[in-house]
Length: 475
Image 1 (tube, rainbow, N blue to C red):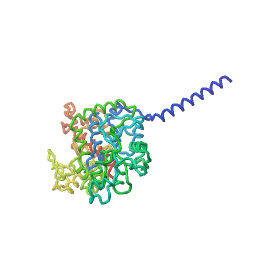
Image 2: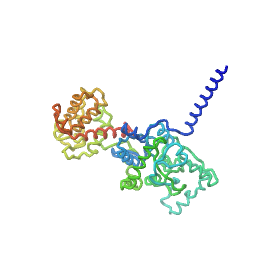
Image 3: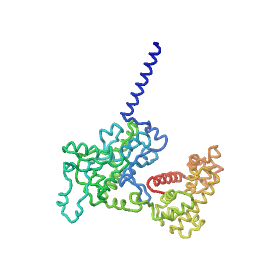
Image 4: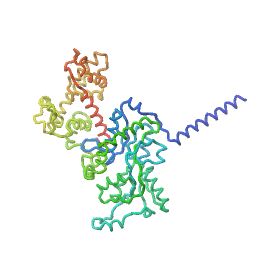
């Protein structure tokens, strides 16, 4: 009997401690994964969660751009890792993704709040901002004086009592309006968009007349007001607030490295150049917001998209992959010429152009046709050697950039040293050794010396750009 009692007590204690641990985990918002700087460096890349909007991250004329994006590129270089982008929306959702390991850094313009510090660790501040009311000017505002316009706008927080203001759930804007209701002694009616909504969607809804009010950061508001000229963003509803990025609470080494980098980069002219490019350049902002070649307004990458789609269809490729190659080669400049004499959209060398029927390399259609034929030739060759299509693509790209003979040499070296010469990462390692006499003078090597960092970088750049195109440009 006594043994049964002890067993019953033990089971009760085990149940109690299990529930206690579970409850503690749920209330403290602990990260599900434990990934810090050492693990990030070991795997070779950092995952960044970003928002797709007119200042954080977008694609313009084939180039990935944005305030957050440009700083992230600098950070990745500082950490000596690659950058991988994941587009998301909704702050609460993004925080959950961060803590579940889908990202390593939350690169949103986050307002530092007490509630959020329970869930994430904030980096050092990037800048300060404040919250403003976004409202529409009167219909005939252009025919009125400034005083007449201002008289019809909300200028005092107390004027919001009883009015509906749309905000994102879980945002600092929601919290500010809750506190503001208490301060003015009356209810401001909060209306919520979906958890996946974006601040700029609400700003656009005000401009279009679908809703009357929303709240956002001053900087975001000013950027959008350059495009939607019927918006007023002059009513301040908060004190200055700190804007920062966030990492998991169990990533102290990463947080420390980011803060070290921030302290350094903010002292350099580069930081203000990037800041001004996206927050203090209204004319270029309008161009990007209205261009067909911006992911913010259209789905085009270049003026040659239709030709690219035709060529990609012939290759059996995603057209965005071919577009990524052309951007890498010529930035879509049909009259571009390299220092080595390569010309046109596809940057074909004269002998290659002649071989594949290109008589006028500056003609976009001819250059593209010649490039397609060259890529088909390379695909036909490597399909006999490399079965895996993803691996084969890397051999094709490397051959397009550096010439097939150098790649064959690297494969022969891998074979000689009993390595897997069907895997690109193995062949790449031998390609990089072709600047070492011990390797480029090896009897199996035909083409000799090669400073082959370029094709390695070439492949990585194209595949990274392709992944970024897939995030924002539909197939």
